[in-house]
Length: 85
Image: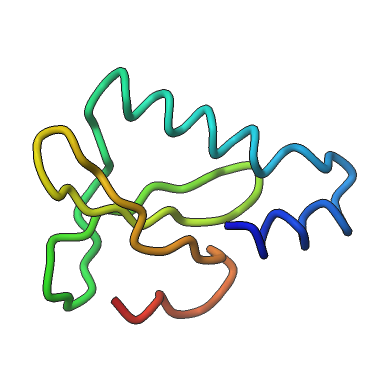
């Protein structure tokens, strides 16, 4: 996340857009409990994917418990393949 933020700030016309969008998505997850559709990649755990539309990154999430959701990966939606999970 820090690497992406630094890169985004260096080249984007809206330097805070990536973190702002990420923060809004986290707030939405906290209020709704929804973590998006299951990602179809073969993984050892059930992984969900949500798109940060403005910045063009996918957020890959896994539910560890009812109260704990972890970020597995943040990956550019422009890449032709998904991350190795």
